[in-house]
Amino acid sequence: MSVKLLRDQVKRREFAPAYLLFGEEEYLKEENLQQLLAAAVDPATKDFNLEIRRGADLDGEALGVLLGTPPMMADRRVVVVRDVTALRKDAHSALERYLAHPASDTVLVLMAAAGAKLDAGITELVVAVEFDPLTGTRVPRWIEHYASQLGVSITDGASTLLQAAVGDELPLLKLELDKLASYTNGAPIDEDAVSAIVGIRREETLGAFLDFVADGDATPALAMIETLLQQPKQTGVSIVMALSTQTLALAWADAKGLAANRLSGELYNLLKEGRAFPGRSWGEAVNAWTKRAPKQDARRLDAALDALVQADAALKETRISSEEQVLSTLVLAMCGQLSPRRSAA
Image (cartoon, rainbow, N blue to C red; front, side, top):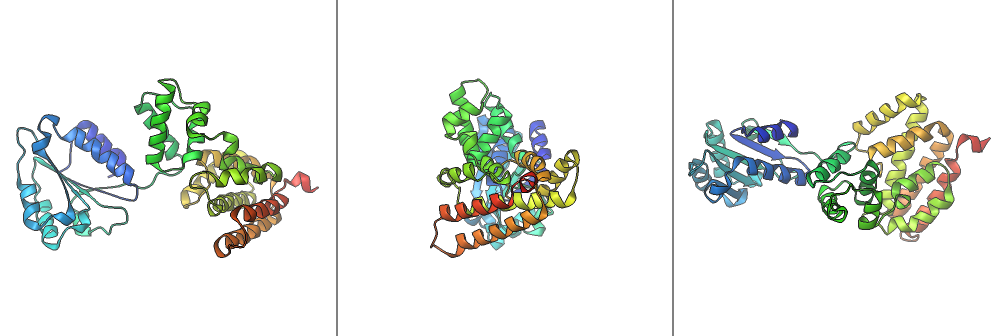
């Protein structure tokens, strides 16, 4: 089942006998679990009809008692088993027997940790919902959705700036949005608000740096390196990764030779096919690449990729040069190679 279908069931208060929530995105799993519990459990009888346990703490007998207890003064009872893959052998067998004939007045929710190995015999007997990390256009949509839950709107520019500053980690985005909503006090969240609360301006983002490099503008790009390296979670390696993604995207676009109206959609498809690290929102990246692709050529891009390989090796294999020195050398090399075609005439 998709996450959307799960949310639709929760809204209608129509529940399957058993769910398995799994996948890499822990925040979304927990968020959807709490929404399910809020809809399925009567607050007045919550103490009697909600049980939350960990798999490692349950044996077969204890699990059987949990699942065999009827609801008290309510239509249903909810049992949550966290870390279900840690169940002991006898508890696992008891779970399989229960799932073959689940109770009609009980909703069982099994939670699997990120990376856990799932049992096919269990997944076939439950409604399994996978929670993948949000990527691409889904992160801005989540930002807009969560802001609306707080009773505020957020401009596209502010959303892009917030994502550039915080990244794609939903707990951190939630924390900053909570502060921003309090700061604006019901007014729309704009770029000025993000700058005031998060402490970053558009001209200080990795996206701005990537644009300077793609334009072959070394002076402002060099001036930004120290500021970028001081930002949370920003390292020399992450900056090289973003530059590599951009250069490969420009090389791909140059090889395709598509018109701008077609290139934009194809670049989105390219991002969807892989696990690229553009260093900014997909929309911002695609717009930047579409604009700059016609100004590049294969020879210059190949040389830029060679410089990126050398920088990556220097960052990972030696401590002789600092990250700032390695990146400065890389920017000078890339800006010489990525100058627009008109500058090469």
